[in-house]
Amino acid sequence: MRRLILEEPFSATAVWSRRLGAFALAVAAISVAMARVQVIDVTPVLAVFGAAVIFACLALLLAGAGSVVIWRTGRRGVGAIIGGVALAVLVLAEPGYLTARAVMLPLINDVSTDINDPPEFSRSPKANAARGAIGHPSIPQEWRDEQRKAYPDIQPVVLDLDSDEAWPLVLKAAANLKWRVIDEIKPGGRIGIGHLDAVDRPLIMGFPEDVTVRVRPLAGQTRIDVRSASRYGRHDFGDNARRIRRFATELQAQLDER
Image 1 (cartoon, helix red, strand yellow):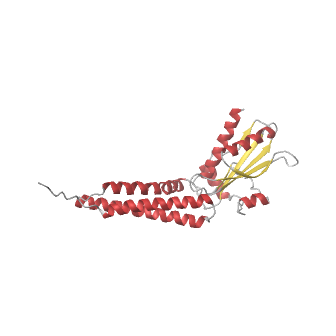
Image 2 (cartoon, one colour; image 1 turned 135 degrees about the vertical axis):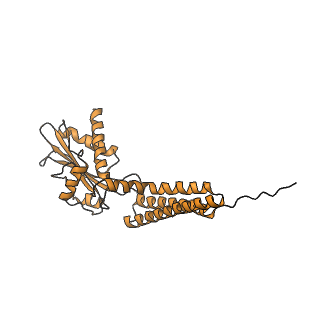
């Protein structure tokens, strides 16, 4: 005797949760690709990523609604809900992380190891062209006060080396960090102070960030100051302080290899 087995219907809400989650992830990937190629202005890139965040939030809302439907009616679709939530979380992880850092860290986007006399970015034609004519004015006093409280460990690096010995270490540290050097002047000569200007691109969105390193010869020593500034937005989410720490760590690694 044949028996007719009726399967429980699938929850349409759960299916749409997974679809929206996948769509949100695809839109987020497109925004990252747009940012990495650097042929489109930052505003449309952020607008596309904002759309991905909205779709991810909708996927979570549908997942919640689908869970209620499945609980009440016994429909199928638990796997689709889990998939929708997982995809949405992938999209929302970075914005959530940045939101938490924005709450904990000061609203600044320019950090220097020398609070009283921050290094100036090079204004040479080559450096201006590489930065797209974006300038970084003097750091406001209130930002310096905020930095002093939030990042007390951001301090100048003093090496027990002459500037001629310290300069190659600075260049190698910048190269190892994948910074793109856009201008440099070796310490010595009439002025004595050297500098290196570079551009760093973070891993995910890849928006360019500007760095300048000042190398000042002392008596039998060399003082190195670093300034890192964001091109876009008022909040750097701690990226500039982290960039300076990485440079100091890499510089120490070069010293240890000597």
